[in-house]
Image (cartoon, rainbow, N blue to C red; front, side):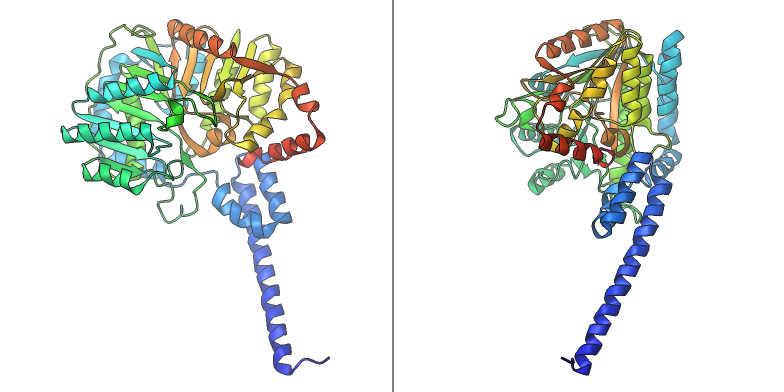
Length: 493
């Protein structure tokens, strides 16, 4: 049957437009693959994205431009401007900290120097570091410090929920703001996507300077929503600071039906390290708000000797993130693993690493170190949880022991190396923390504090079940297929 000329012409036009669209899209896919190859930080990630674009260009190309970027644009440049315009602050901070810079020797100098060059910060001595390892105790300690605030409170969390714990925080901040205490608050807009407008506006109406981190600001950053500010920081009057894994949500302080016990760890800092932590907050606050609040930089609260370390801890506050030319998160973990002689114990909610981290753990075990990795039994995200099974065989073969925490969800980010080196912070053992998240850790050199971390982790290991290669190989075939597919996704998780 012959089509009328006008219908035939319309079909030809549609076919031509469709063909043109396919050609343009394929050109865009090729250009995107070139971008992936030129910018990707890992070969695995480059191959994964490239293969996906060749197989599913209509899906993978837009996903890459939303999720695939590895470099966070504009942050360093904006901080350089802030530093140029606020030289007084950096001068005051340098003068204040200069008498407190620690002198490292031997192995501590060799490995600790890496962290100094990585972070452009110095180890300080004369710090007191207290270990907080119960959700209720963590927030009771934070709120107690806030209640004593006289001048200002700095607050930063990845997740803030408008629930009972969130309301406790809001009420306390409103009370302190009414009393004339200045409050500066940063939250991640993706992590806190359920936070109500009322919560934010009520604080803003009371004079609290509250801002979303706003990772998409700037003309070249409209699609960089895959980056997260995962830091959790509280500083009160520049004299006491808190950093660790806990966010603001009821599950962090009370048992829930979904997760059971939520296991987390925080540290409370007193001493010169607090000013370094305060500078990490200030960097993020300037990115979010575009202004520099008036804070204390010329005063250090002396440690009173009542906590772990008794004022003798050497501390470096180590920020890492997707703004660095080197992969700071990966180097941070590799540095800790390679310095281990007797042991390295790691607690992390996720164990989805690249080959370099896995090889370093295996090498540490093969040279005789006691290498243990503690992860959750209960998942909060299924793909990372499934991917972990794929590593059981190779880890066991080298002598790396993996344990699953049984009572609930393990969320702490802690590692312990030998007798004196430990870290508590926000960085997980996964690709996101290594490459995509803004993270911060308090790294501590102190035998007494390390002993307290050891005691804490021994208690956690006692509530774990050790897993082996058979926990993967004896699973049904369909489960093993899901595990392998999840592992393939690990470079872009």
